[in-house]
Amino acid sequence: MKKIFYIYLLPISLMLFVTSCKKSFEELTLNNNKPNSVSAALLFNGVLNNLADLPDGQKEIYGQYYLYNYDYYGNNRYDLGGGDDYYTTLKNVVAMEQQASASGGAAVNPYEALGKFFKAYFFSKMSLEMGDIPMSQALKGLDGLEPVYDTQKAVMQQSLNWLESANADLDQIIKNPSIAGAGTGATLSNDIYFNNDLSKWQKAVNALRIRLLIQLSKKTADTDLGVISQFAAIIGNPTKYPLMTGNADNLQYTFLAPNNYYPMNPNNFGQSGSRKNTSATYIGLLTQLKDPRVYVTAEPSRDRVDNLKQSATDFASFVGADAGSDLGVMYNNAGLQKYSFINRKHFYSTYTGEPSVQIGYPELMLNIAEGINRGWASGNAETFYSAGIKASMAGYGIPETGSFIAYFYRPGSTDVTGLSNYDTFNIPVNFNTYYNQANVKYIAGSMGITQILQQKYLALFRHAGLESYFSFRRTGVPAFTTGPGTGNGNRIALRFKYPSAERTSNAKNYQTALVSQFGGNDDINGIMWILK
Image (cartoon, rainbow, N blue to C red; front, side, top):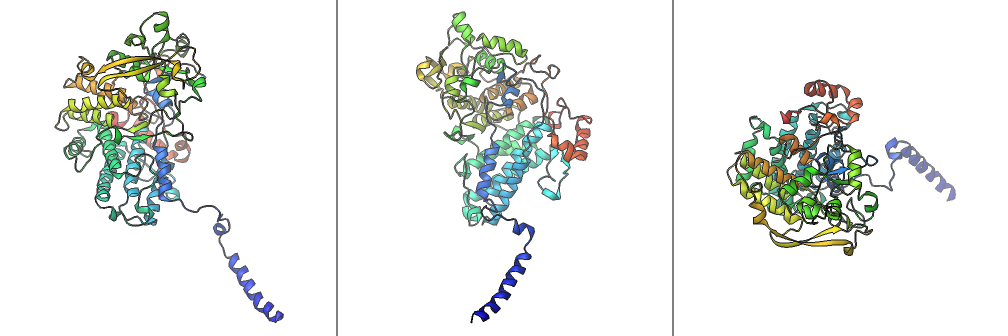
């Protein structure tokens, strides 16, 4: 019996050996202890994290909100380098859509709908930074290693089309969830912004579309784009195009302790609390308008309060630095406490700070006000203008009537978390009194545009990445200052360069794009199509 057993065992062993030899190299190197695919929900979560432009970076320098005063940490120059590269994130968007379909999602499902939003968001953002970019031939992997550049017009047009389609898809799913199919690909999860609420995503989709239409304000004569008709259609049909109704609808990134700290927090206050100071572009506008937001976002110059004996709540005690100042001069003045620093209570005293708004209700209201002022749709521009200001103030806890407490860090204190280290002041507020000032109360016409843009600039403090820079570049409001500290021959650069990888991995198309736009040079002062 033993002999017979060996006779039968030998062929089986040989078969196993031959079978194993036929395995591909990929099969042999596969690690079965690691996942071989990623779920749509996990890819979605990664995309959401990459969507956020967080505060305390160079982008708020370019918006002249907050300035370096010591060159060891950085500078305020407009020597712009390469723009954002979101292509890896966009590849994950495509993978997310594919995984949703493979795991039970129908042709129209939440991941597919939001995939269109993400494509519009990231492609338009890169184009606004740099100009023409690869889009239609991008994201093809080995089948498209050298993608041609699409014109900025094509990128913006496609982005608007994606957003129209995303709105329609979300509307279908919200009204009839069963059309999204069955399985994990049909149900949104891992949503760090809206907790899987598709109705809020639909509002964000339409808010982004309004933002892009406003960015195209110089292109209203282009019939291919139909800027005015698109804007009017959205404003005139809130049932088809739902819009944000308050700050609760903001697309905002919320910080959570202990794993996700606000960039400025008690741990790094000692290192970074004085390496930057506020900018005169921002502080000067607040004080000019006697705006109570200055008491929440900034602190008075200690030189004005302690040496010149001015009241800590006097608007004249808040002083920002000129962005064009030589860095050595700014460093010296900052050391003498001649400038206002960012408010330590609001921004440094906790680990979670304030949510970082990417697309928000105040901005939307002011964008709508601008479009109506320009005659793009019927409506009362002042109503939206006023709503935008009120919402921005409410975001800082400032009531329409009543009072709030201002906290100013006491000199010599060493702990930003202790309330006893702050001087407190009761600030009375009345929105109507503020609003009825001659330079705040809305005036129709070109002055109204300036007022709207000024208020949008104030509302976007520390939010939405480069949006304030884009708005200034398009309109010149508010006036940005230049000088030795801003470099670039006393000019505000108009664009970012292309990522360095384009020069080597896509050289032919890169050069073609430069010739067609900027005379063959990757010129940070070149004027892109959307600004002409």
